[in-house]
Length: 346
Image: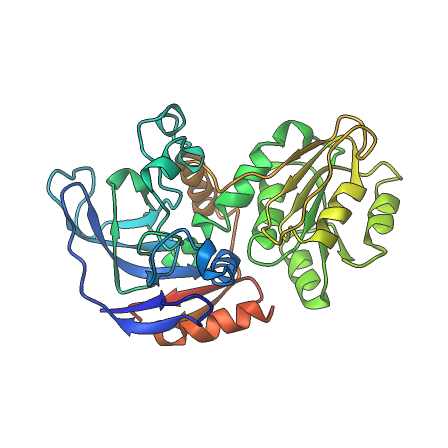
């Protein structure tokens, strides 16, 4: 079968032919309908060889949706032909966090060498993929696989971040979304569907701000040296109750801290290498700063329920499997508006 692999440190991803996988006991073989392209992949492919924590080559794709093609021995609860989404942050399944469905915070994954598909285990950017356990599959019913696949990360990750701050997103509150691309434009929709908060979006291009307005942002502000002052102005000088930074670069993290209000939440989701100092007097009194990771299995089911209800619609650009290297090139150049999706089987 064809697959998109990262084959050596510093190299561009390649389309290659690899053996067809077969499910072992307890595993599920998935015929992949759609696989997402993510900035996390770009980050992984920028690491020096001595910092890559898994062997290469690696089949990419940590967002996957498809149909069940075969079941390994002992698997029940699914049938061949079922349409499913892959829950990506695999864990051990037995620690106290995994028992609650919080495999994104598994306590033993590192010890046991368990890694997500596309970020250590073979991923979804192939005609077929192996899912290690049926608990990592969530039925999608009649949802469109192309529109659904980004929800497994670009939907789940902002959902998890928002849920952490729901108590502060009351009527009269303000939420700031920094970065309105793949995750950010979904976060805006989730905020509008789940809360009564006023949403202020920040980004560096007018095209992305236009997308932010289209999906529901009340205000769209150019993310430059004047952005923090503009947000302060829009909030009567008080700042935002919740700030969600989907870029995480040093300039955006500084902006996130500068626009937070007293007792506000600053959530750094992006992996752009920025860090926000925390200490008495460095941020408004009572401000909380966190850097969450992905989301729980329960939360993925809830995101898909929102999709069934029509509350979230991901803006996607589609590419064939052979065009996947081009999609990564465009993503690296900032030329993807929304989310890029690979169609491994046409």
